[in-house]
Length: 92
Image (cartoon, rainbow, N blue to C red):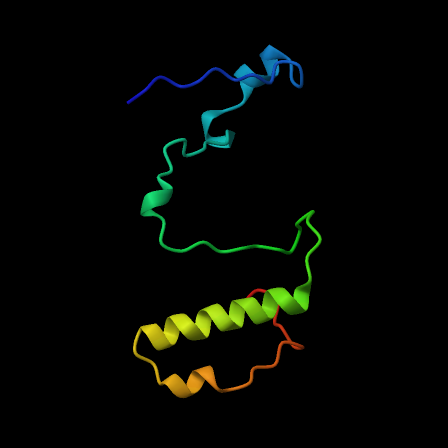
């Protein structure tokens, strides 16, 4: 296991305030994320700063999902079905 990298936020918070923060309230990150082991990536677009075309994003999501399902053995008729993109449900 490697040593923890030093915090470089002293310009934002006094050193005393950092040392008083209990370990249970601190935020930790995974520095060793191996993207070659990641099989699925999701997008949370509720509070993004990016501007995107919702209709194109929804259609891309549907197309990719249907292709994946057919690749897993679901009926190929799913490829011919039409899917509405005008009623997304937040949180699903």
